Length: 253
Image 1 (cartoon, rainbow, N blue to C red):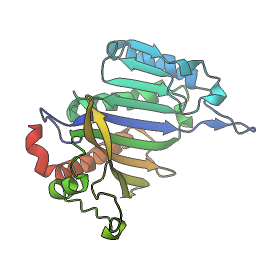
Image 2 (cartoon, rainbow, N blue to C red):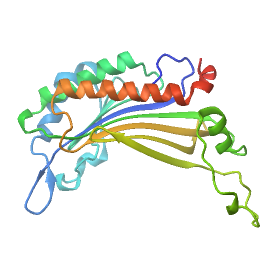
Image 3 (cartoon, one colour):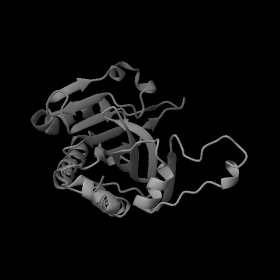
């Protein structure tokens, strides 16, 4: 959900994820020799003041060779609180939920990115491999109704299954669930929209995800360019949210 300051916004979670390269040994094991020192320095520079509640996950006890890109530590403002920062070998994420506000999210995320580079013991060795900005939304929906008709009437998405699939069968042409995903080109990656059946607050819901991802050789490699990437990715998700949910916007106000 990239639309901001909607009192009844459908947002479930906003997630930024950055992955950086790990050293590979002759046996193929991927490790980051700077990671353990990074955890302490990152906490001292950013988390001790703004995200002092530290959760060490059971995965922190895994051998280094078994833990590439696995979250091991969480840092929160208070126990069970949001936003939160997650850190593991080769991966850092910043997560926010219903209290999301783009201005605050951008400010805090900029601090996370900046302090990551400042805290990393050997910043010249960092090679950022992957950037992802993801928004997850949920809208109440009774799946006894036809989800394909709902998407067509409210979001302009005309997903049609051939009538020949249902003729001379006992199958009712009203889906019990949906899991639809489509990805479009984005610089050095893709921009994805996904709709699926899920639950929110113990109720059936239509879950939507908007994901912008860049990976590979041309991913931004410094704080300023990464923050600019985040802003552009947000701008795209914001436009997509407005266009897709235009006819439903009234129920979020």
